[in-house]
Length: 364
Length: 80
Image 1 (cartoon, rainbow over the protein chains, first blue to last red):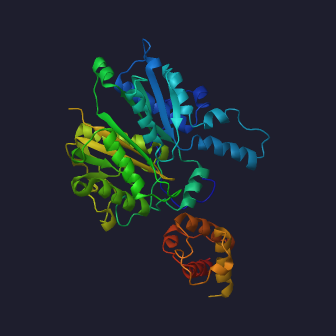
Image 2 (image 1 turned 180 degrees about the vertical axis):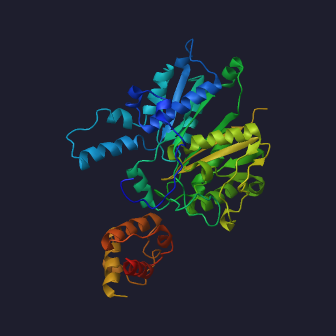
């Protein structure tokens, strides 16, 4: 790093080697975040065994969530201009920086010609993106969608901006724990292949879970502070959209950033929505393990939620040390738990009060 | 505590919050001055620049009033 940074830890993509995924020529066009999108999209397409042939490419949508776009490329350009005083910047700056670049590269790589765009709502970007893709399928606009989100956070300028927010933990992320000291920044991409039930059945492939509902709301409250009512409204809408009775929800993958404000507010919101059933819910924050990947957070958590349903195993809230009376839910401390889940929510509550909640249901 | 640290802290807060100096006294709490958490980190940023100090997150979290902030600055200046 070119200077000091108050927090020593971050959840970088471990062992990532750009050259084992892309050749030099490709890399010149791809900021880190666009590389992450492509790697995740390739994995998702491979796992779903989908092939975009016989016109399917035109019936497929791409919706990627991204909070900030190509921050590393931006940083490099600023260093050239303001520090090295170069008279010009790299002409690939714009195509590398634009936060929709991930969607474009997926489209080009797989020959997908349907609607493709990027959504930005800070830490809710992924859930808004998955939700829009879901509604495109429901509306009959498309049969298939590749959707999720991405973020790349490890550029010095971006890290310093987060340091100044004073929400990053000096050691680790302990969501819902009384001694929590903030979030840990993470990065990466999560992409899911969504398709209509008819399409999946016709292909005879493995179905992990049903994406059943989307709930969206805005707090009309504050540019950084959360609101329990806004969060509760988004959860209620997701349940209503999916026609899911409260009692069938067994698991909530919480927004759970590990900040003092979020975890207490989210607990209040969950109690407000679920009443007595809140005490029978399992609620965990996987951010304790993958960090807060901002625009990618909802997608990584959607994957965790879907696999929790599919494998009947709820991921834990790691690094938990002591109960907080303000976060008095079963937060699955430190150890994954076997549980049969009929329905689950995945929460995202962004800075600025933009909320998006996804509801998933088991395929029985 | 030297009076000038307190006066400088009050000036920084008045400027950052765009409120009259006279509305702030050493016993004012952030709550009374309608300083929320985001205002708080903005003020800390201005304080760090004014006194050329680094305020750790941990220390920042416990500050609730003008006096506590001035005392905190004092302590950091003494340890610098």
